[in-house]
Length: 189
Image (tube, rainbow, N blue to C red; front, top):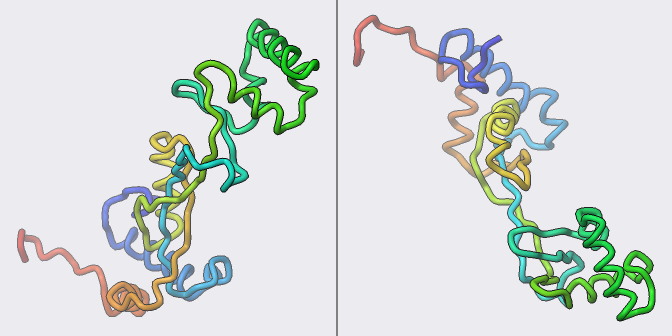
């Protein structure tokens, strides 16, 4: 079935489907899932910020040019055989063992000493992208646009408890007081 959540035209059928989904999320079983009758479904994008002092976070990354790895193991796994041999040699010179035999802290320190490498802290945050009346519309947005957000998108349910305009419109839709008007047959009518 076509649905407004996926960009279908506004018709009596798609409007009825929308109101049914709205009721599910604001008065029906959907409320149990997100724990509020005043739900707004917000799409959020993950944003990563590098440069946090390592003393103030337990999230570290090794950065090289435009690439980053969130663990020494992930960095190691991306190396070719020649690069692994070079890193093992650096570990042997500094600690008399192979890179993978170092403690986690020693691995981070060694990576930070390599030319053009930076070991730094990072933090992830979620930023607002857009909001929807229903979860289905938020999910449809994510399916359509996830390729534009390489760190990922999620649906966050925000309670609109004191957003009187939003709630008045939503309640009027669910109660049938705000309805889709029949087209009058001429523009501007």
